[in-house]
Length: 403
Figure 1 (tube, rainbow, N blue to C red):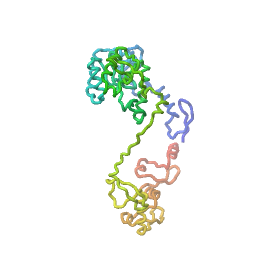
Figure 2 (cartoon, helix red, strand yellow):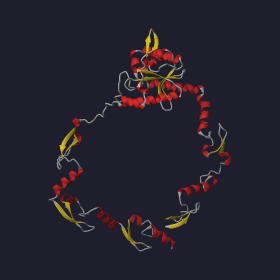
Figure 3 (cartoon, rainbow, N blue to C red):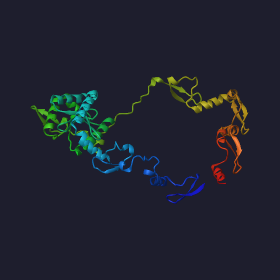
Figure 4 (cartoon, rainbow, N blue to C red):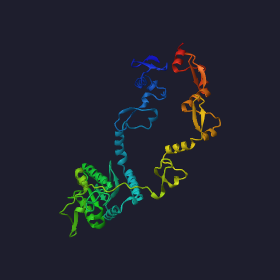
């Protein structure tokens, strides 16, 4: 190893190469920032001056240095300036708004099959009342089933099973229901912070009393999203008027986490998808242990539960027919099966992998003496023919060149 002094920090360090002058990547980065930037850079285009590289931002008029290929394309100094320009020039444009509405309408038409039957029923009511709406309106973290465009109000369609209707389910029996309740709680909190109320229309009310849902939507629009209660199962029609029930029901999504745990009683278990007809049971021919195999994999006459059992069984059969053989490398005597002896063409045998590697090195490698320390070593023919001088190590090569 060679001792060198770093050009930047002055620290002493050890290296193998003669040309290395920096101790770490940090020092290398500092050196490049001092001596390999701007005009000193090897990729610097001298045809474009420094004045041409400096451009003003379109929004805030702040100066920024730009690469040559960005002179004609870059217009903004930051993402904030880009967003400001997009909101004023693109998003407020009437033509752009029309294009967006058309694309949304096309998407909704193509994906109508994804909407549930209660969702489609509510869409029919809104179409009959000539109310402008959007299906599956996306927000930052959540999507709303229906959003009324003019009034900026939200409607959620609540499935009886998925959202766990408290009228049919006295307990939360399935894990999917529990996960959905937690999501409904967080969604409600998110939209309350945005000062947006959601009208929850439940599946049972949509299927059994659709007139109630229609009156609820109309009163929700008239009162600008303000209602005494936002769940459809707490309302009833008396004398063609919408009235609130005396006994108000609170869904699971309004409960605390401690209270929800009291109602959780998960019954579902993991279903085994194994097809019993496609499997066969066998006893191992060596250890007599029972195990299962697919019918498609059952091709052998003998059956074993593991690879180890197969090897032990094979050794039992080959014990009387074994032959003693000498290792070529270390001359140790060891046993080998008659089958393996008959297969080999060269009749060369090794007691283990170490002996095999040693023999292959001595057979194919070139043995030579190091030119510096005179130590005997070996190399492959390809490595030996690469250079005129031959050494046992890198240290010997460095010290030989110094001489």
